[in-house]
Structures are given as structure tokens and as C-alpha cells.
Image (cartoon, rainbow, N blue to C red; front, top):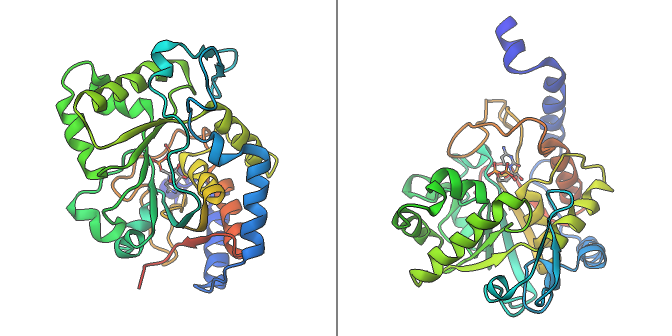
Amino acid sequence: VLCWFYIFPVYRLPRDKDIVEEVLRQGEAWQKNQTGIDLYRKLLTDCCNPPRMFAVTKENSPLGKVLWYDGELYHSHTVNNETYSLFVQDNPLQLPLKKCAVVGNGGILRRSKCGRDIDQANFIMRCNLPPLSKEYVEDVGTRTHLVTANPSIIEKRFQNLLWSRKAFVDSMKVYGSSYIYMPAFSMKPGTDPSLRTYYALADTSSNLTMLFANPEFLATVGKFWKARGVHGKRLSTGLFLVSLALGLCEEVTAYGFWPFSVGLDEQPVSHHYYDNVLPYKWFHAMPEEFVQLWHLHKSGTLRMKLGPCP
Ligand code: CDP
């Protein structure tokens, strides 16, 4: 009993359990609600203008423009000749996107057999360069149109690209010709690794296209959710992507969003579909984020896939 107490502090147990019960009560039933979809697109357009602002472009960030880092106070980058030349001209996506799948990295994807479902979407977004190797294909699919990459992954997994770039370039091949979406101007130490990532891809004629996340967009989306009761230090990558999808897509389905240690079958669930490394404790507020996503699911604004796929 003592051991159980240390692994799962008691105050969290009832909450996870209540959520499991609530999700089970709702069941698989889901009804699309066009009014809800239109409303959220309008709310997000008014606050954050996703089509125009989600990436740093030559259009929204001309030479001399000051980009304020959204993850740090008082730091900014003034767009100069070097950085300007790395920006895409304008939003490169053909809008509106039709069916979008946003794939979180939650352990519920394991043995979900949702790969085929995910691959049928018209636009597939993934978080943090997730593994797509053979053993996971059946559960998470193979196709990707946009994948986020945190500069910290480049530092840790690829030695900051200071040595060989081959391992990095090779491991990017699983993402085909997607956009790689990097928060280059969120935290000061992340800028150099992001620019190095850009050059590593460009120098090897990679099929991936770099899009730098616009810090103004990330900040306004953060405020949008703060006003709706999400209080973490920073939104999780997944919630940024869902917000982007709600702004750009006609229909959104979210997979792999389940920040709880117990599944719907009351069995333990790992944090990720590929490992059980837990997040830094109070950085994100994933359970709070889940509650918001669940509201959107219940109102028919987006669909959350939590059980196995047929
Ligand atoms: O870096 P971060 O913690 O944001 O993300 P991650 O662990 O690579 O997972 C990608 C996204 O999936 C997260 O940002 C969450 O939105 C979502 N996720 C979840 O809802 N439940 C989990 N157990 C794990 C991830």
C-alpha cells in the first residue's frame, strides 16, 4: 500500500478514475456539430489568426521586425538578412484542410490499431519527431504532413547537429515530404539548434520544409487557453497543434491524448506509445488540457479517439 502511495500520490487517483468513468459513460458516440466547429474557428481566428500567423513568414515578419520570444521574458530577435532568407514567403498550406488527424504521443495508442484510421486523414500532424518504425505502424500509421521538433530534441538526440548530420537526416526520412515545425524563437537557447536544423535539411536537399513557429501565434494561443482554465507554464505541443488544426481544418480528430496512468480498460498505460518517460512535473497541465479537449469532443467540435480503432 505504501509503495502504491509513492508511485501514484492519492490526490490524483480519484481524478483519473472519474475521468475514466466519464469517458466510459459517454462511450464511442460522437456527433459532429458544425456550429461548434464554426464557432471555434471564429474564436481562434479572432485571437490568433492561424492561417496567417502560425509560421514565421516573409509576409508577417519582414526585415527589421522584432520577434518577441514567447517562452522567455524580455528576449527578442530582430529579423535580419540571414534569418529573413530562411522564412517561407507565406502560409504554404492549401486551405481549408479537410480531414485532419492530430496525433499525440500518449501510451493509449499502443495496441490501438489506429494506424489505418490516422493514415486516411487528408492532413496528419505529429508531435516531437515521434518514432514511426515498423513496430508502431499498425497503431500510429505511416503518413505525416506536419511534424513538430523541439530544439531540445535536436540537442539531446542529435548532439545539437555539431558533429555528424547523417543520423539526423536519415531519421527524418520517415516523415516523407512534411513540414517540420520548430519553435525557433520561443527560448533563446533554441534558436541556434533550429537554424542548424534548417541548414542540415537544406544542405542535404531533404524533402522536408522548415516552418518556424511564430512566437506571437504561440503566445496568443497560450492566452486563449489560459482564459479557458489551462494553467500550465506552457501549453503542451499537442494542444498547440489541436488549436492550429481547429483553425485550419474542416474536421479534426485527435489520437493519443490521454495523460493518465490508467486506461479505459483500467489497465496501466505508459506515458508515451514508445516509452514511459514522464514529463517534467509542473511544466504542462496535460490533465487540464485533456478536460478542455474532452469538452470539445462532447460538443462535437472535434473528435477524440480514445479506444481502439475498429
Ligand atoms: O513535449 P510534450 O510533453 O509536449 O509532448 P510529448 O510527450 O512528445 O507528447 C506529444 C503531445 O501528446 C503532448 O504535447 C500532449 O498534448 C499529448 N500527450 C497526451 O495527451 N497524453 C500523453 N500521455 C502523452 C502526450
